[in-house]
Amino acid sequence: MRVGFIGLGIMGQPMALNILNAGYPVTVHARRPAMMSPLSNAGATACNTSAEVAANSDIIFVCVSDTCDVEQVILGDDGILKGIKENSVVVDMSTISPSATRSLAKTLSSHNIHMLDAPVSGGEQGAIDGALSIMVGGDEEVFNRVLPLFKVMGKNIVHVGGNGAGQVAKACNQVVIGQAIAAIGEAYILASASGVDPAKVREALLGGFAGSRALESHGQRMLDRNFKPGFKASLHHKDMRIVMEAAHELGVALPGASMVTQYLNAVIGNGKGENDSISILELQEQLSGITVNKND
Ligand code: NAP
Image 1 (cartoon, protein in one colour):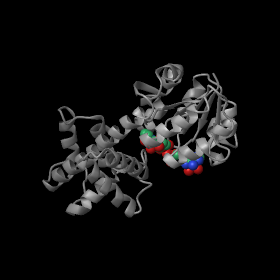
Image 2: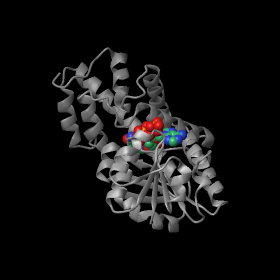
Image 3: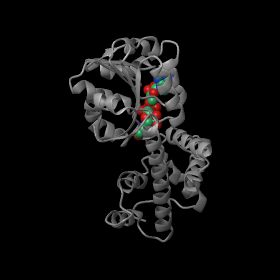
């Protein structure tokens, strides 16, 4: 099975490397040629265009930024559709709009090409460790065809439903994670304002119902004031736009998600979009005039 991978950023790079290290022949393309070097040094074939990747692959993974980027990579000049053969599979692992995903799947299907949406959770470390959570939408038979490759990249792989269902699951994930970050930030503000060490509060909370992977990982990085991404605030901002658009389309109220969206609007407004999305903490600190420090 020949594998293509397009988009070699924080996530795409280690995901493609894991596929290569599992013994599959891999062809890659990234917009900036320098991003392909680690892959080509490890034995992958670098291509100038997405069309070229598609022409040399049976299954083509895409991991780029936003809805318009996936549309460009698939449908644009020199895009996947220009090189792909019938019965091949396009697997979009970016986080994008569920409704745009359904529309892309329909377009590809009219060319006898299969599509899965397979957004992920687990961050850069999960991608490096091959331990991502992968939420898949599309036909079950196509899912089973790609499953061995998903197993190289992830641990918790769930076929959620038809096309777009994976993206809906991912939007739900971002609703939960965004509010978890905001809730942890509030807890740390309360602890610090009370003269109690937020690191000790985290330690205490980890053993009870408030314990979570978010408190474990994001909570620690917030205490370390490590705002290096990880997961860029600009991408979480994009994800919350997808969530709010879906809420608007469906006529459902998501007030908590709306609050997170406003925090992220402000992170972007403050020029911190390239920081990790835990930068929400800095805004919360400004609101109360408090800085969260370990050992307060
Ligand atoms: P990233 O580091 O910014 O990488 C995105 C890559 O996509 C970049 O290499 C970029 O190329 C490429 N790209 C963007 N638009 C493109 C276009 N129109 N044509 C060709 N290439 C394009 O982002 P990331 O963190 O890897 O995230 C990728 C996707 O995974 C996003 O949808 C994100 O929401 C999702 N995700 C990320 C995480 C995380 O923790 N980082 C976790 C789960 C899901 P350039 O380098 O030239 O800009």
